[in-house]
Length: 226
Image (tube, rainbow, N blue to C red):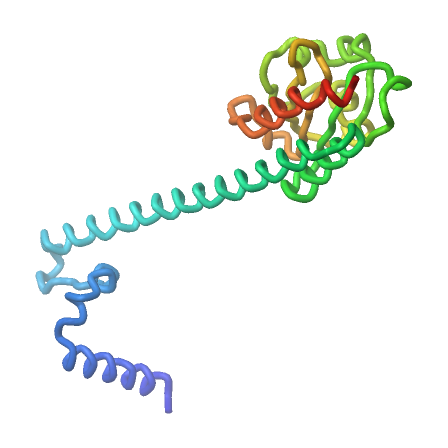
């Protein structure tokens, strides 16, 4: 059977089905919306046809918005579940090394963040050995004073020496960063996440997640640093 004959055969099946089920399109208006129904008005476009076209375009736009809303809601649900899991695991950590390992494991695996770093401020000799980097407050003030003086997360492109301070050797691979000082009565450290894309973390972006995790760390870090 040729392709043309196959098309004719399918059209005949559709014709027969609609003939036997005249109310099908009434019961399925979504299919009717997708159909092209030109009117025999010559080269002119009828008012009805134009109105149908406008309604079809509006329906497509509304469906697009609804799809975006559903996608955003789904993403927010996933973010909430990951955040809840991280917070619970942080609360269950028995000591500082376990807490830092929990944080790093979540940021790297669960959240799939490219670059992340927890910097603890203090004397390296007095703190337990962990995966976190340790720096003196004097050194931190020298390298990232602007960040430490902020009361909220800072996003964007930092100087090369600031990136290196936050991420070590990997700092040269980081294009943009979101960082927040860990402060609760006293200054305890810095939590930073980065991405190779210079435009990934921007000053205009929301930092609700990072700020929330920082608030949790602010409450549990002091007990581990004693």
